[in-house]
Amino acid sequence: MTDTTTALATAPGAPATARLLAEAARAVDAPDLVLAVSRNGVRTVHTGGSAEPGPVPRELMAYELGSASKPYAGLLLARLVAQGRVRYEDRAADLLAPGFPVHPAVRRITLRHLLTHTSGLPGLPADFYPQAVPRWSTDPYGGYPADRVVRSFLRARPRHRPGTRWRYSNFAVSVLGHTLAAATGTPWEVLLHQQVLAPLGLDATRVRPGPDGTDAVGHRRDGTPVPALDTGGFTAAGAVRATPLDLLTFLEAHVGGAAGSPTDSSLAAALTEVTRPVLRRGLRHAHTHTLTWFQHPSPYGPVLFHAGATLGQQAFLGFRPGTGLAVAATATRRVHRADTFVATAYGLLTETP
Image (cartoon, rainbow, N blue to C red; front, side, top):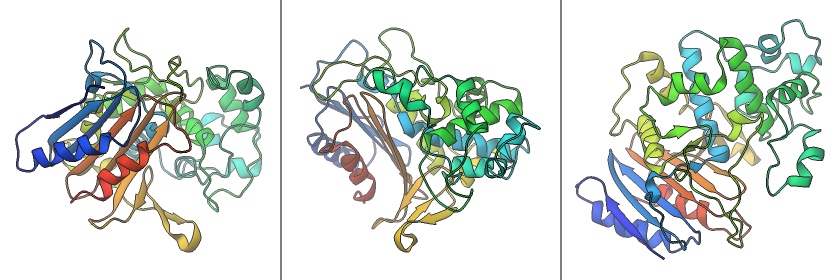
C-alpha cells in the first residue's frame, strides 16, 4: 500500500488535517482511495489504496460519481430557472411531448417533483429489470437508451400523487435531464458543460470516459476490475466523472472557497438556491433536503452531502455552508454491507471542527 498526503497550500492547521486524513484512510479498504478536504480554499489531499499507483496520480484520475452526479443536475436546473428559461413548476410532459396523452398524475409532475424525488415515479422503470438482470454486474443500464426512458415516463402510472411522498428515483432525475434538453433544444451533455462545468472551471469533469489511462478503474469486492459504467438513458442521474480536485472546486463554489463567488448573477443565484432547504420527510420530519442535497445537523452546523456508487466505484461530496469546509472522497471498490467508505467521509464532514 502506498499512501501520500499533500497540503496543496500552506496554512495553519494543514498538518493536523493531513494527519486526520491519513488516520481516516486506514478505515477504508479499496484499491484506490482519495480523501480531499478544503478549508476556506486551502486543500489537503490524501491518496492511498491497496493497488500500486499508476502513472497518473490518483487525485488526477476521473472517478465515476454515480448518484453523486445529481447535485450537478440540480445546479443546472437552478441556473436555467435563474435565467428564466424554465420554471420549477413547469410540467415535464408538456415540455417533453406537448399534447401527448398521459396519465393525469404524470401530467401534474413538475421539474421540481422530478429533482426532489417527489414525482411518485419508481426508482427505475418497471420494464428496466428484464433487460438489466442478465447483465446486472457488468452493464445493467447500457441497454436502456434515452428514448426508452422518455417513453416509459409518458406511459407511467405514478404510485403516489406528485408532491405527496418522497421516494428516491434515478428514473425521475433521468427524465429531468431529457426534459431540460427538450426545453432548451440542447443535448444534456452540452447543456451541462455550458451552464455548469465551463463556468466553474471544471475542466476535468465529464459524462463519458476520457482518454486511456485517465479514468479510475472500478473493482468488485474480490478485487476483480469492472468495465467503465455506461448509464444508457440515465445520464442525468449518474453519468458524471470527475477528478477529486475538480470535486473540491465544485464544492468550493458552494461554500465560497478558492473559486470565489461567481460573477455571473444566475450562477450565484443557483448556488444559493440549491443550499436552501425545501422539504422534510421521515419520522417526525427528521430528514431535511434541499433541491439537490441531503441535509443533516452536526455539532458545527448543518452539513449538505450526497453519496454515489457504481458497479465498482464510490464517491462522496459534502460541505458545511458558511464555514468554508468541503469534503470529497472517491474509492474504487464496489459498495457492500460492511463498507466504511461513506461513514468515514461523512465523519470528516460532521466531526471536524
